[in-house]
Length: 514
Image (cartoon, rainbow, N blue to C red; front, side, top):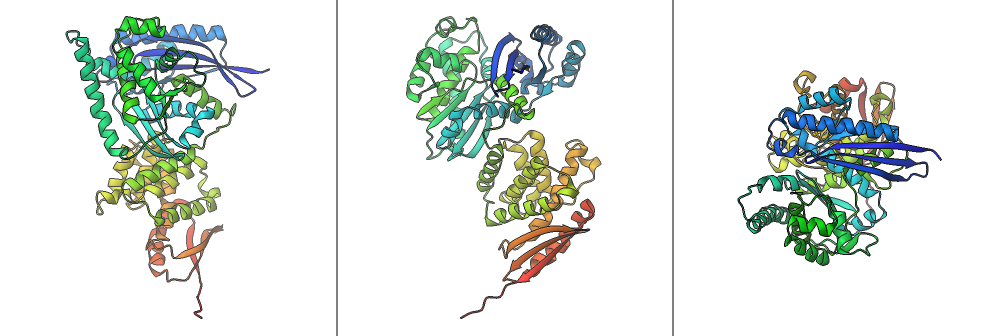
């Protein structure tokens, strides 16, 4: 049986890790080794400071050791990532360059959205996941620098929010050795409660969830120690809260001994336990499920999907659209017009496939832009495109990377504003992304013009390209004078981008009164 050996390297806020996996022909992934080395980048990086040469030396030494281990396992492939902690360092690019030159390992930077999505992807591979979110659930991913909360109701994403409440950050904030332990814990709880109460007020009013899906360091050890007979790692939320309260009263050495941890001086233990308890009690779920995954599991699962070792069992595109619809509703822009615009832009996109050369992912970005194109009017009618751009960039959309959000925001912006020359936006859009923005914005303009009155005057819409024309045929019982006027005004960008002229052909339907 053919087996692929894969290694996942991750440089996080408080450790550098190597996890070795075997991917079998039977579409199974098995971890065979996990090595972790404590290197606390977050001490400097979270404050935007430069990472000192001592830390760079430590990282390089660890990575060189990892290279030897990978040689021993004869790995077929590996991928190496660095988390948001390194991204926030003032000398990030120089550190990456030094690491690559000294170890041969090129680290790929993960922003928060990419980092959380990797862990989320892996969680979706578990059979329990879709069952739980199909009812109602909160997926909470706790890291060293921050945590991410994603709410699901009836399988749809309600919101995903990034809170600056990581275990390493908490440990750093309360690292004053002169503070008594009970005072430190009290202040830590107050800070967490303050941040969680804002989330609760914004997104959790009059809402209850059945499941809390919790991922993060020590979560698996806590569950196993609390109940050694757990099979599916699901437990009553009240029972877990009581056990976490019990652990809070103990010191580091006692906690480490109880959980079976080798490092009894780990200063992240107590912040983790306090943070987990506050999350469990604030979100008030009936049950808590710990899938027992980490970022390395996300890396290998993503690799297996991209290289077709496995097929996705979860609809990630549905997540993106449902998250976009929820965001649109939050800014009071969701309407039947948006449904019509998504349908119309998709028809034009499909009819122009051979001309635009884009794929399935770009179509998703266009559909997301169609859903969000009016959200800026909540802030300002006069400056709606720019406001929408800012809202989209500031919002997490589960399933979209940071660069995806830049593209979506730009499509929305240039749906109305004239397309900026590439030289003016090259700092945020590379050449490929700029072309995607131009093509999708041109399609969105034409689709938007077709429903300028927001009355959906047409039905049985068809779009077909014939030579140098895109013919859009509609049936209507109402006059489309406004739409035709706006269509002609919006067609210029479409012609410039595709060298194809869009044309509307209207078939009038007359209703004979009895």
